[in-house]
Length: 454
Image (cartoon, rainbow, N blue to C red; front, side):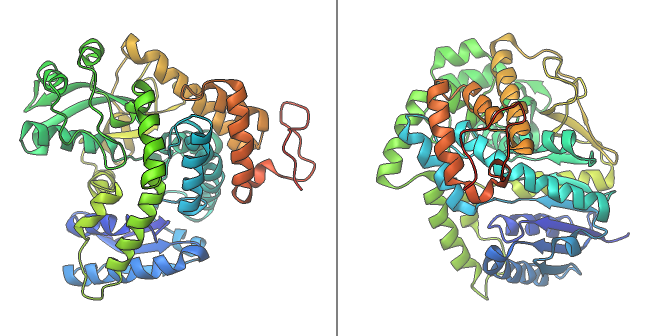
């Protein structure tokens, strides 16, 4: 069987050992001959540490997988079969700003939702599109498997603004929900299946099955009784749900829905946490420092269990299962971010959605959902509108589109607050938003934006 070349952009990430573990476990059916870990000069120290651990893991496994470390992205992309992207433009310092600045204005600060999600998209989309253009030249047949947040927005940006159509966005939220439900039910995870539909970090479980039997009503009854053990994430506080709300919704919400349905509680919790122990980004920064100290240990040759505290649980299963299924044309079902193609009739066919798909050699084929339940349809459509406008702002550097995106997001209370937050955050991220600070640049819709280059 021909060996595969995989390029991982952002290879110095603390998540990389999870990915390496996944490739090792599947080597017999997914023969990764070359794994290229790529990073930027600022990430070289972490790349060297993670790379050394990856090599020890491969040596322990006794498989002929060659680990390459490089700062040359083009070298890594040349003739790659799969390209995985797990980048953080501006590093964790940028995420700290994304979380702290909105709190000053009484708005939730979060990595992928609200103002923070917008700014992360504005910083990340141009870089991902640069990678896509290099793929067009150097590995046009490769699949882009994107882990970078906001994953749904990035998937749609690639679909709409590049010639790379073999792109799939990946998130560990759906698999985390399935694993959490299995834990709640005290059964093996492979006995649980969920019909997922929506957007990235805005996905709902329409139906839940145990051994093929629909147990949605039974499960929701357990949720409303307060038994939520395991059905959340490391980065989202388990605040419980109002039982009568869940009974009315009759859907399984994902952990990120707390930002929309429990905004006041989350905001209060975030403000208190920021004062007492720091924002989630500041906590993660400390966790990363501890992880990399562990990674340095020359005797460590496995993925340390502490990585799950980072929020990276199940990434190996999600990422490696997807790559394995495409490579082997398995036809199994996985929830991923892909072009809608009519699966959800309430969303444009050209847009990216997060739905269950049949995974084939030709890529994921979305399973038809039809109309979303009316109770959630409007919220999903509003977030999709936000994503579409945000993508245009990221590509064009149009201040007015950025302000429009900020304003229409449901977590931002008004255009006045949106403008205050946007102006401060654009300035805070100036170094990573060159499209907004070009000399003599004018808005794509006419006029000069209020923030000009110095």
